[in-house]
Image (cartoon, rainbow over the protein chains, first blue to last red):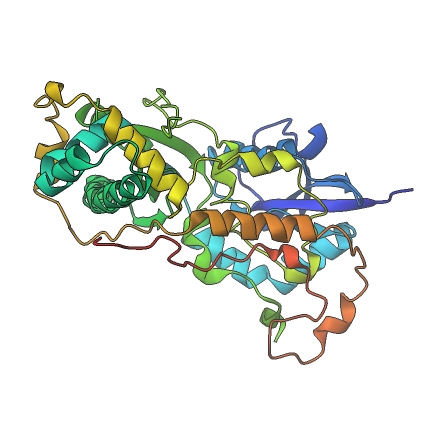
Length: 248
Length: 158
């Protein structure tokens, strides 16, 4: 028989506006463990609950719903505490000053993430146009020559890499005027160019939206963009990850 | 065969996170109090979220070769647009951080998947003794540390 744990999503100011009726993992109601200044957003979860993709998305989407209205300091997925008293002790007592500092630092800020992906054909045409040697290698490599084809593919891969770094720079520079800070994530797809997190002021969202739409038009036919947000300031919390030594 | 991602055309406003996005966000970043990190198991579907991955391998190279061979170069000449935009910025300072992403993903999944078996959680209180190192002994492998950047991609001529 399973007992219940408390899944922690993140922390907001006690007076922050938070949408009504929020649901978390397994559709459970979001509760607040709070005092006069801080509110920890939590929901109940069985201690033997498995993590499914819905659970990951529920955690992310809950935080996105909150940050649309108020600053939230996100908890990494998977922090489960035995009960509300533990939440209270760990967050509202032991880490109180730190959390208040973070909420202040990120006051009225949110993150959006832009991913740019090359159109495959556009990218390949581009690398061939730039590098006559590569075009020649392509022309001279017989289809049945497997090791030749591997060499060709390797050369294409290297050429894409340099194309990518130029384009990534473009994307980052494009958004620099709109962002308080930027952070570059690893890209994963073969034709992904850049995955850039932007820390922006809530008041600037419309400008950022417009900048994304504008870049989208500029690179149309060459690249496609994904635009995700609003998100909590994940990429900008790195240097303040709370370790146990904060007890000391 | 294609390695393109599906374009997302909602660009007047941002869209909610997809499963692929959580790797860079809730699985990697955010407040974490190590001794309470417990993630029991991740559905196998997560493995599929990044099937299309940059990795230096014969397979990938052959895929690139196939793709480049498919091009009909008689149509060449209409690939303008980006060159103008990018040209002035080519080889700028932004170092692409593409690296062995698949390792990172696997590592993270391994951590998540591996965390499910030992569910003991009674060490909480004793961890408060003077430990300089933030390394609780029974620390779950689920803390989803940022994967080491490593150059899984061989850089020939890059």
